[in-house]
Length: 126
Image 1 (cartoon, rainbow, N blue to C red):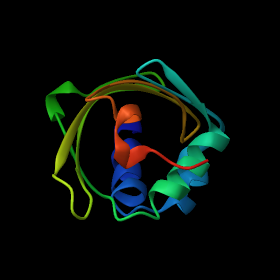
Image 2: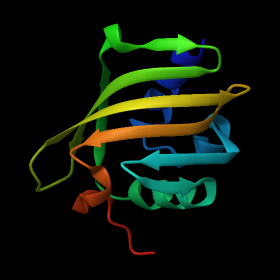
Image 3: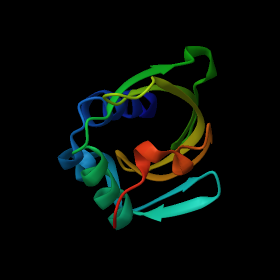
């Protein structure tokens, strides 16, 4: 069940760059730990609202053999192809564990290569 929610979120929110769906997919107590940096729900929402307004585009795919669902958690290996006008295409590999509360993502712990938090595509002017 949670694997399907995760895939739906990536298809409907991330690939379509629809930040208005964050309250549907993410719990208000959400926290993301990415490569040692932590974001709370408010930061995550504002960050995505800003980034989704840029020319960035995403295509998401999965290592289907790597999904593990146990209780209210999902482990996954996810690939993001990122394009931005005038820049070379980049691919990110993410290993993540997502914890759900109800049908919403409550916590995510991820390791990403290359580290997206250091990429210019994701620098916002807050």
